[in-house]
Length: 583
Picture 1 (cartoon, rainbow, N blue to C red):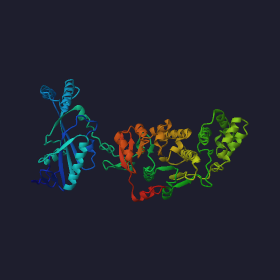
Picture 2: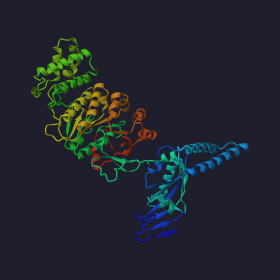
Picture 3: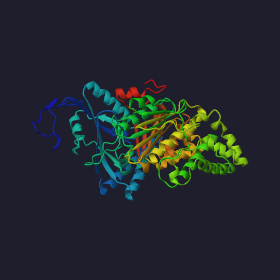
Picture 4: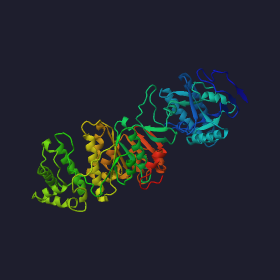
């Protein structure tokens, strides 16, 4: 055993590289300071490699250094080298044939590959390189070193790489993996351009770091911990092409837990958040941060869709009429036939006129009419289509669904966090309640109060399938997704029915207009649709089928980052207070 004690301020392996306090060398490892290291050289390669074939070694969850040393082979040496290799392989094949032995499949494949490579080198389509790939494993103890080494060997074997220890030469191997460009081992293998290029760029499981000298603004939100590299995943939705996001997961996968953490961390940064909450999961969070909860369906809580937004646009009345067309179509469950639509358009104008509201902006501050006033106007129209439409609206004006609309708006949602709870609404009213909430939220985004500072707005639509199952509701959500970016707003769509959303053109358009896409555990019935829509690999599909609760995959541009949502103790208590959550 050698014991090297470098002098103070000396360098080990190269100038500018500070040496450790001591370097203890044995045939099986080196002790560097208070840790241990062992080097392995890649000696065996598969016949064919795919893109990023070094990724299993680069992304191994441990301290592992991978060094690739390469030197180009001059063309005047490459051709004779290939010629000799082909001659050896051909002679082996002919000798086997002359002696009546069966051909060796490995020799047959190698001969064909050598002939193809020689042809490409002769045409200048490929070059040869001498390549040495070394892996140094670091650990605190010898037992830990053995454990990590076994894992690295297994990861290498998974892609048919054969790694062998640098016995009696671990010091040289340690030097070979230092960032000094020195290769004392010289355990090289000839690779062509295609195989070498497939290893670059060296794949990373983490998001790309800022360029040297560039300081990233502290605007990102902690999403969690990278499950492959143990790095921290911080994502800034406001720096993307648009600010929208979509979260797709099966029931119980932890999507609400993840979104509550994102809501909290956006509130820390001064973002105004509005949430459409079908199951009253966000109410404790709103109460904790001093937000507002609007519980639609509770006695006395009413929303009048005829209210005009407080803006000075010349087409405000026209826009409100178009929105009421959409709302009534959702109420009826389908778009009315042309005759009924014409009657509805006439009745809307007449209803506002009876309330003293017309195209003059000075009249827009008068009390708005109610839905029952529209029904009365339709009954007085005299047209058969108008009377039929009034009959279809009867459940919403005088029937079981009238409580939400039978008076002026009784609540004004204000605050840095507004939660629209739909839990107290019957299922038949939830789609309409979602649309009413979205309209109120959008009015605040599109026309903020006079003198108010422009703030970033985040809109969370939980269980968005309630709205997207209706054509008119899906179109409203799509228009909101398209227009949000220009108003410093972001739309977050959460749904557990991924297959139903992705099977419609409007649903796919909403997903496509989200620069941030988070996929969590999927069901076997929907994984094919998700794989096709997001272009997932087979490994990513398997990850989503077996992901534990709270783990998922961030898909953003070319980045695919598997992560696990993490929370502080205080955040965890708030994130699990929703109904049905136990951890």
